[in-house]
Image (cartoon, rainbow, N blue to C red; front, side, top):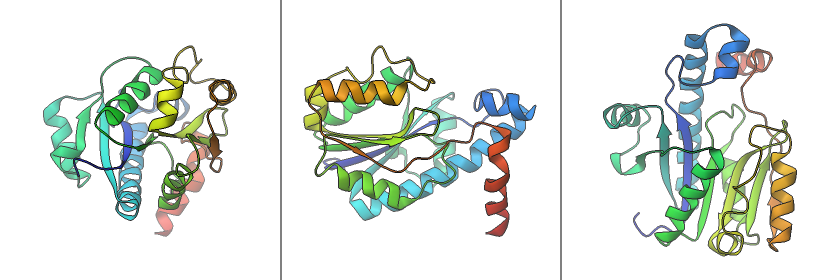
Length: 218
């Protein structure tokens, strides 16, 4: 799908002990357990995203960090992705990495892009489908997180051209100011903004119980 109009990108970290879910590892007292949870979350996220991508005629990509090319290929096979759907993330803070991802996609001719992380136990394919639907009428779509950030960002090419890097520079990432500051920047650049439902990522031991219970019921 080289000339895809839409692109859906999962930003993920290699689920190895000590390389992912640091807050969850600290909360649970085990980096191995946190990595195991991340592996389950990554599988859930990619399979959910794949279903949404098929329904929305979107190109799906996994942009991964914390591993090398050979390990990425093996992980991609496990996640049922092709080599063409895989890429290694370059460095920088979260804002820099998201901006680079959007810039690369739009430069290839994509018209709508949606970026998500891999820490969302309640993610549904309908969430991603709604994001693309909202981009038909909005320049920017955000999925508010309960901690004050956002779990999804979607942009149209028009919105990206109007705002440039404003949504991704000078933002205090991992604080409760991420969403309000992003909305302020969007308003200052005249972007039409759509919001999705609130969700929480899986970063604390207290959030594990309901998710593990749902896994046992499947």
